[in-house]
Image (cartoon, rainbow, N blue to C red):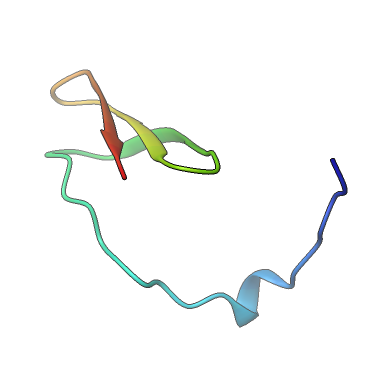
Length: 47
């Protein structure tokens, strides 16, 4: 897998996912975005 670096300031959100509290971490895969949150503790997946 080739690593790609993009300046953070150039990124623009294409969607917002409400998880009920602060996001602790996230993982982007080829077909989904995984987000872990606190308050309540949760892991959510979106396609």
